[in-house]
Image 1: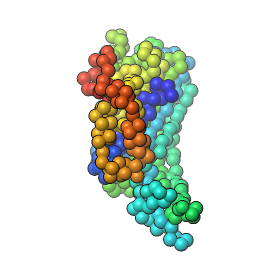
Image 2: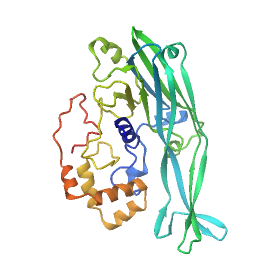
Image 3: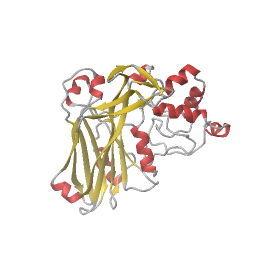
Length: 342
């Protein structure tokens, strides 16, 4: 996995689970609070239906850019017990020695517009529709004798929206790119938890220009500082990503990052917790009671993965989490979310 993909996936799942990693914890009952693009009617509760990314790029009109918008789509998982030819919904069911519980999950979505030439975008914006129909699937659960004892059903609601990409030329050799992601899903209203089921969750945008050179908005060159400060971003924080010094790719995330963010090599894997500190969270997981561990195992598979990973760490790997001295440019006052140095 390259650095851009690694950081983008970390952003996608930031806040997906929070310590303690149990579904009974209040903070995990109110999930996906980062980077949501909600149906328009959710504006009544203060949740935005639009995310805007605006960046600068030094390029020629014939140069092209690729735009990818990634987000999570909420999935409702229900458990049913088989009684004859009928399935009856239940809160939990044990089958094959494993306990299955009803819960909310998420699946990854990506919508892309590739090969867009900058000169063409100045003349006319490119619009890509987001059209994901409602759907679902069923996973049958078998007992020790191989017979069906129940089922897991997963369902998701329809999502509608659009991605609009346009360009301006505020200076010779410089383009201002604007990417707007709008949620136009029809929604009858209701609770915020219902609105989440038709939101683009943890949404972020990746822009890539094979020949163009994006301009850092955090530390722009002096001759472009005024233009950079005029970029209007809403619900997004664009930064350069990739190898240090490369300027072909930008990640526009719903959290504050610095240019060229990295996943620290000492980190044993995602813990999903905003402003996470691996050492403290790992030690907290290891201190769980057996009942708490059982609840995690029976919950989200990513929480189970965290539990198993922490339990398998060797003393040497635990010692690596105590911290590493590393020089980092002090670009922003807030501690970077994904610099996991303890």
